[in-house]
Length: 132
Image (cartoon, rainbow, N blue to C red):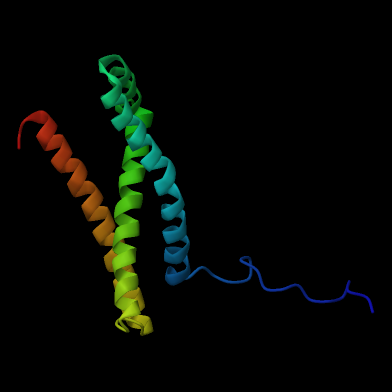
């Protein structure tokens, strides 16, 4: 029996991505992204405890453009993962499992994650500039 004529299994090339599958993938990716971001935060805290020289080095890294972009990505990943985790808790309780509810809560969760990220960065900027 030859396997050359067997059809291939459907793959990502066959299916059009749906909001639910994209959000599920992003939930997994943000969970993975939280690990290096948390390690960067631990490095910053350890440098603060190690003394002024180590802290100045860590501040220079985290205060750079790349460091701030990493922090922005980490904070979005944190809020996205948090909001989607809350969404999953509602599902575990049996709420929001109908397809229209899934789409509504999905968009609400993305908007909430963006708003929390922007809000936390605006608050941090206000506190740093003395406007708070």
